[in-house]
Length: 238
Length: 114
Image: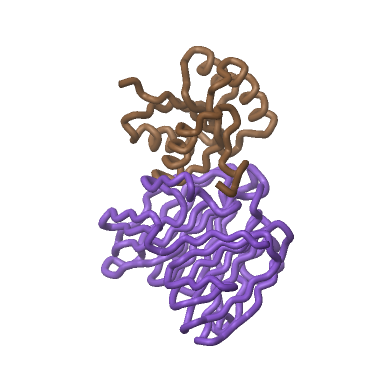
């Protein structure tokens, strides 16, 4: 029998700093809820909107896999490994913090907002050499199908991380359905519905709802309206 | 009011300095940082810390040694791995650790279903 957890969009932590409006699915910064610490090794899922010209100053990370997915606008990145890059909608960025990195992220535009997802996953190895990667994604590859954007394997589609995790993005027309088969035993699946109405097994998800399911090996996903969503399969224990 | 005393141990001097500065932005917390195990042991011996943050680059052997020495000296000491993250996750993990009463080797992923 599968276990599930539902996180409705309006129950997320809400932090509005003026220049930054962030919705936290899990405890983060001033949002602290012991019932919402993580889903398996998925520790952070922030839905961020950053004002023009503003951003996150230089700050450190240790031993964390950090994935950024821009949804609108361009994000400028600089880090202590010497990487200077702009990530755009349609791309994905990954950093393995390992023994430690420092970086900054700013909205590249001075007059329009940037929206992006910040996702942090606990790694399966400590103190790895810090690493940065960024790749473009073909938007057509997620039309009415699941597009793999992350895996544990450097030779597989998408970026890779130090964790037995697989992420997929999808953009489904109303009525499209698919079965998702778990890649690894003991993993759970966290579905973050970006837009539209979606049914995962018998659970209806509206825009920005999150739904975790584990102790199963497959789920049925059906778009009740046109829908965009992110699937994150992660180990439930370290 | 007495501040919460926090010892930060990390190998990268720049990151250590940044983490100490970020922790000290909270007026109720007072952080001290060191990159050396022996200095950490000496500091822990001389000061009553409430929490120890272990940063990136601290090798497993060092971590085991430090945990053993610190918990022998203070069985209630809370020792956690920190993940950095500016004022976001870092502050949240410290609050989480301070509210957990088990001490010692608390780690939220020990029970991911909470």
